[in-house]
Image 1 (cartoon, rainbow, N blue to C red):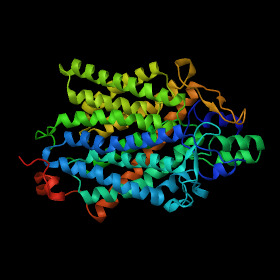
Image 2: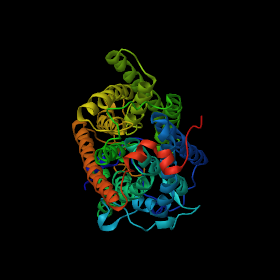
Image 3: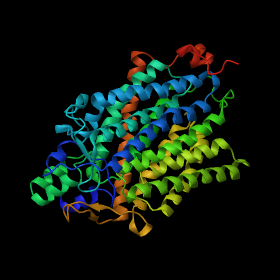
Length: 479
């Protein structure tokens, strides 16, 4: 790869993909001291992302299902969070953020399995030269991403997939789908490694450029998880809905939400937690964190209004469910663009996402007749695609965006790199297409494997009783 290409793969001005850790700091002449403000910022961002999962996502989903299945969806989200957290520190972190040898384009290795070599003294690079945070902070922050992504999937399978099948599928899915995607998009050497390589010249520069994930080397921009989290989960949810099949009585019986009140509470917690999700992805308290903050406000608000208004026009009245769904669609769409777009661009992105996701959840689903219970594909899949491709446009400095970053022309200093809109949009579209194929094919294989091993669904009689009693022996309400 040439230095010219590096100006594209290095990421946006002021923020980029997640960095490789550990050994990068060892190359420095002096060990840097993490700023306490940055460390405190990452502590807060991490626990806020946990809040958006449990109870935020759990309540959002729980309020949307029928009362006989409410505890099952709460249990699935909660249990997935616990299970994936353990998988993450066992081998997931290593698979995502270490060198994978011959397979490094696609997945990391096992050099940090069981967090080997990670302790209170090791550091993680940010997106600024010479700025570091404790590696444990990065491990924990990325762990919350790994936990929420598979939890998003269960919304498409709600009310008809066995608890044991959910857990087995998720364990396999994070291993073969999520960790590799995180590696492909977010694994690179970091600003100081790039700077040192640029000073050393060839062949060191080519060696460092080669030590990155495939999509990162393509130059794909994903600030906080448009491909890794939302398209990944949305496509897996669609594949699961098609393979698992429709709920008993779907299209013939009324299936109203048991509590839109709880859904609204969950949506509000998601919005709150998403600030940790997006702003924390900057890894430090620089100006870009506040760009992500204002964009997370305005894109979300625009999407909520967009969904509400189009629903009002089409159906004759606005609904709380529609407003809440639009808010989530806006959060999804702005995720990959959070630190790249300007606020006005983010508003346009949110409006587009709110309107398009409304039609995807109503007309497209009705046309294709699939049972995506809680519209995971319509919101996260479609919203993620809109956001990922839109990022290629809105990163343009002419539209108020950050532009692309160049870490090598002036080693040790971040400067603006070259940007061409058509080229960047094509890179974004290529990354979206790759994510759809990677996730769709592997998810289908894993669903089929779980079906063969233990079966995906309970019997029709058990499904009619509700998964709360069948899987857990409990009721959400005893009145």
